[in-house]
Amino acid sequence: MLKIATRIDVLLRAFKMASIVGIVLAIINHGDHILLGTMTYNNWIKILFTFCVPFCVSTISSVLAIRREQSFGE
Image (cartoon, rainbow, N blue to C red; front, side):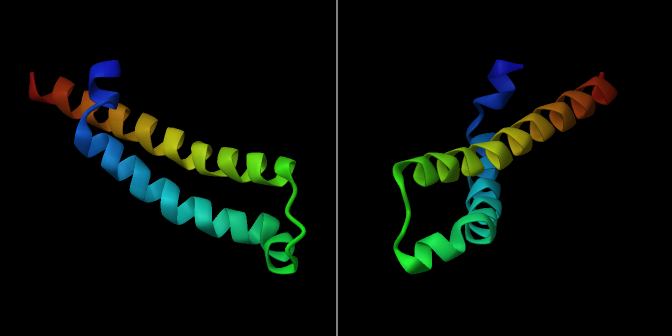
């Protein structure tokens, strides 16, 4: 499973998804603080985790899809 999760195509897909979804969620959740310049250290940490969630979801989804595809191919 870890071998699939660390494949370059899986990591690139997860990075792309995390970038898109993370930016949207960061704007929704912290856009007012960003625009007003009132971001705190804790807000930045929350944004970091905001990007981690879609990265993990995308990676897990890709791994499960690839494993399923491989099991049908046997």
